[in-house]
Length: 519
Image (tube, rainbow, N blue to C red; front, side):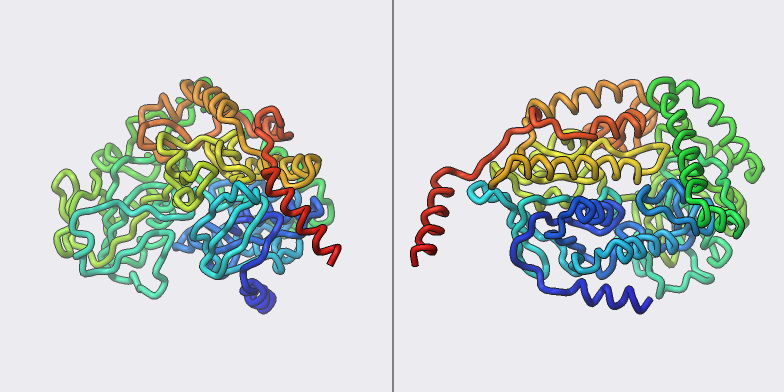
């Protein structure tokens, strides 16, 4: 702990000057980008983090029961294996500690700048660089890598009367650990991945728990267990065994992809397993009817829990099968008229995924923000580059999400693309920039959306957070991780316009340099 505290002090050096690369965010994407930059021999970079430590969503989400739904050995960097994962599905505390460990192991502390929330980023077409205003100063960068992640800014619905609620209110990603839930009447709003972990974690201590469910989720049993000491010792002594374990976990998920993307009808077998998982704990036919989805499994993210349904069957839990519509004092009113008196409200209502707030703070070559450019829907070439935003890349960009595997695989593919992008700039030499051609972005996005038409996410009969306001899926990748790895292995310069600093500008610079030499 002392080492991490020292690291945090290091991260508060002044923000300013010019760097080759500025990385925004220090979650898996930002930490991965920083490691890759160092491995490429690039040390002239900073990681701008708005909080006071690394971790991203695994720092922000510290709610009771918080854990990953992807196996630990697959939810970690291939270049930083951890033989000592304590469980097959690790909890938030261990994942956050892993990211701290990676930051230390790869010498990232000198590059971290904490409390440096990015306020505005503007492209300078004359200097071919980005001007970045942060909460702790202004700097410029040749390249910006945005790794803010889609699960970073909580979304709270606009509920009539919420402002006048006299009790405690917080989002799952901003958990109030100072508030004691013991004996309280608590409302849980939402039935997503966070909610199904929170419900069984708090049910034994609260007085009464009311779950407001707009749409029931498909929940599969969670095959979690402690990883034994001998297993961990084997992975430490023979690293190849950990790689084999990771490879098997990856391969199984790759084989599942076609059911999600090409043949959703094959998911019927999985639905039967999920129904048995529910039936084992929920004996009341009325409650079981409330909890049974009417859409194809996989349309929304499949959730994992062996404790959620047993918790809902407890006598101090009520399930309201209707979304929250209004709040009148301490009374919560559902869309179907059901009322509940509560002392505290916990929102498990997700994040700004298809309308990422960082997009409002990035101003491109034509003076428009990225949010304005994406008004009709997010799109980026190979999930990384948006037209009109030279030398700007995003990690976990449009259509790079997954419905069944580890996002770390996708992040590493995008890091490959980032590394080659920087190599191409070096080959071009001088002051240069790459701007994705609009036709290349449109072509890539068209191919992705055509493939999306057959997927369960578009045909499964649900409305999920994968879809934007117009109903288009701008979130998920409609293929295997191996396909994406091949698509992002190299930068194709034909898909980019090469920008050079204006001639007059370069001439002025040469003249000034000559004058200095003469003097």
